[in-house]
Length: 112
Image (cartoon, rainbow, N blue to C red):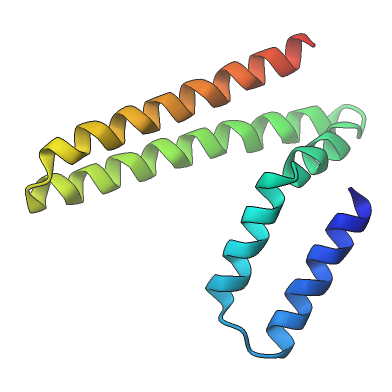
């Protein structure tokens, strides 16, 4: 995974150097990181640090869940005000499924 992280950093640097739109660079790096499990590997490396590493990983994991949930509430509020209440139910269902999947993955990862 280390060569992958180096390649991602190099591509980000090249993109910034040649004035590629920053949102395209960020989206591409997030997609590559999620598909290749680079972020999970990075969390694993951080967790290897004695005492403080596992605490950092737990805080980052919980913060991500809070962020996803808060974003879901914000989008729901805006959508309901614009009259998309039926779509909000679908979106909130997907958000709850995502959060439950993340929590189940976290628990299984701790057990294994």
